[in-house]
Length: 244
Image (cartoon, rainbow, N blue to C red; front, side, top):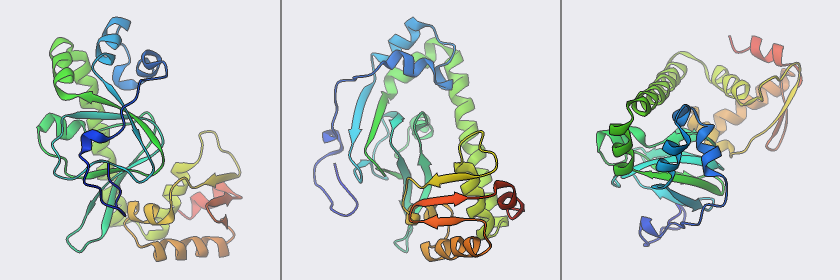
């Protein structure tokens, strides 16, 4: 295990593996990727996987490491990122619970093109490549669902590129805040940021100073009330109007 601030010489295999202490069959059955599989098929897949515990700041894998399977995030948050030639970190994605990642590298049988680091304490499930490939050969329906999941990921990446290219910094910030709101939010909503502003800024392809300036501008306009990591949106409709 290793953190970005304090490099560690221990191998990736030393990441903590613990006995699974939750209902894995129920978890997998509720995921779109495994929806429709029989209890026997779910149990067969579950036999091959491993639970992985990460502490905040720990690295799950590094860019260039061999990809031997894919991961499912059960709880916490994990960032996928790379370091530019100029030494700046660029966050590609913030993975949230019930999301999988690493499938594309697994299918291409290529090394990871990003590193994965826990933003909070996190619990993950690891699905070994050989077990996945064996299951795909046996069940073409699972292959279709994985392709659909990868297609959605590609669509999101294209949408992100469009945002960075065509939308202003203010539009990107407002769009992020609106996406973070709970389903069913109506007139007003209070959002607590679960990651630091530096992480959010990197995800939105801007500096932390630029993000802070935009939040201040939106506060002056009466669209936000910011207290540390807590952001109150008094009128969601008005905020949406400023996204256009």
